Image (cartoon, rainbow, N blue to C red):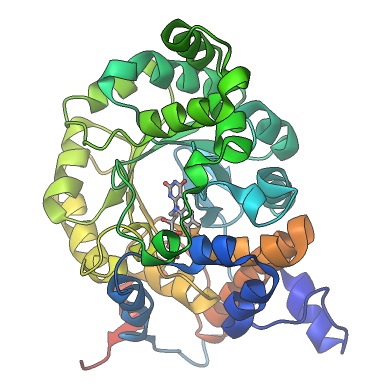
Length: 398
Ligand code: FNR
């Protein structure tokens, strides 16, 4: 990560010279109206998305001096028993080929190259297996959009494929059994999940179980009815109704690695997750793309951390966090408030849109570089909880 800022120190320019404050607008310039609307758009008026980013400004880091700090801070961490170089991962983001022709493969390559776990979305525009190939020896996790129990064959088939392709953890997204009220997509008449050339041909049509089910129902191969197959697939992964806590057991039974519940915002749900014995949660509101008017994700993080840690007996549950992370200092604040790991969402997709694999790499390096310098200059020698905790923050008055 030093490579980015050392270039600056040597008066050299990095491959992309944009700053964190304008990644979004630079990416907007190169995207089609529909892709831009999908990436930047939020639910409703965007109130919750704004709250997500504003929430970071309510906390400030208090730098400490004359600590005889030697060397740069330690960024490595252990999560789900896996030793990682950095406490961040690439959040699951669907249909990445609409942002760059190399899509998920470019992002998965960049993640591996920078030692960052890549979380593949069920709504991927590239198959589970091809992304695994691109990711190589990198750490990869699979995010599940969870079909209705009626289609549990499809769920199990995806889990088996993911396991076989080396995805080590299962991230189950709970907040998107139907897409939120998203004015930009509605204005553009846009639903990427119904595009047969994107989602349909990726995981859906490469899934043998789906192919068999489709043929039974329609009497023809899915290629012969591409758009219908894509619509069927979209219906399966967005069933329109939520599962139950009891149903989580089905997933636990069919997955032998860590199960992580994504989309937790309430203390009660976090406690429940700890009780049923999943290995992790992602405190997330999907970047404010689902429930507008909902609370900010960072706002609920400390309460959830306290509740889960107070549960006792299950202190092994890992707390991941996303929604609104835009710079290195944001990562530091989320970790200080008790997150074990931070997922980066939109920023790496801005990099993908602007420069494919190199663009994603640049964003990841920039975020890590800024995190490293921020901690170093604040006198924080490690991302571990002993050094990076609430004592380094003050809450600004409202
Ligand atoms: C997402 N997110 C998401 N989450 C998920 O579990 N599966 C998915 O397929 C997607 N797809 C997706 C597409 C796009 C364009 C965006 C912006 C987001 C949500 C994502 O994982 C993460 O929770 C948010 O991106 C975090 O919010 P910010 O920080 O990006 O605003």
